Length: 336
Ligand code: A2P
Image (cartoon, rainbow, N blue to C red):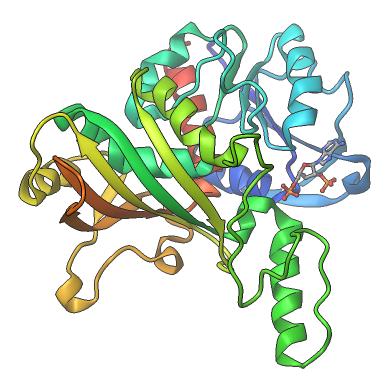
């Protein structure tokens, strides 16, 4: 393409959509024109991009004429309905929902891991689940060095992963608790303020949730590692932003903390923060608004052979969503 692409953000008013707009600007993505789309509720709302106000338009079947790249983050049902329409109109879709991630005809990409998969897209490229992306930022370099057999993991997921309404719910509930008022709920099945919920996404007949199984399914596809196994418990915590994951990983090859640190220090998009003596380890509060994920608390796993424990934190609105989507778009225009 010899002109700057016309880019659309679908779900522009949402928690991820807002970050997509900011990320396009911050990374100086060569946007020719930016179109912002959301539901009828947001029509006329103005959002700022590069100092100029852009009016949000309603997403319709006719929204994609002339658009080159559309970043979707308006939920799975919107993606299922509108991504094929966008592709039909000649647009390449980078989809943040789970709708197409496991579709064999759709690449699922974390650019630091499998950027070259972008090349075989047929119109849609999927952005991974946020917890999976953040975990793989630390796990994949270790897998490349020591061959990961399986992981056991627990996540600590921020409310912004559920969208703007969940951020408002946490704020409201904290205020209600502090004022001694009855706590009201709209988003989560239980109070999230001053609580943790071992329940992210819907339950499957196995007892795991869909979110928990994304780590294994998406991890296999992204790492090109069909034998990878993952047993995960996903937990929602009253944190505004940035997810954390405690991981115990078992490898084929022997692994030491020193060798793992040497690998992780060279990994792209990852900072090592690991000085427990000084109380230094990755924290979601400090990872918020950062592009890089951070890994720490490295130790030999005392219950696994060739095992390593680590703790990884990352901004799920960025590396887990908006940043990764923009990085995919960057790969796309590199190849055009
Ligand atoms: P709107 O703000 O108009 O509802 P979040 O994940 O933070 O809740 O954001 C969801 C995003 O998806 C918002 O931008 C929201 O727009 C958008 N969205 C939700 N439903 C639709 C729809 N039916 N058509 C287009 N966009 C939608």
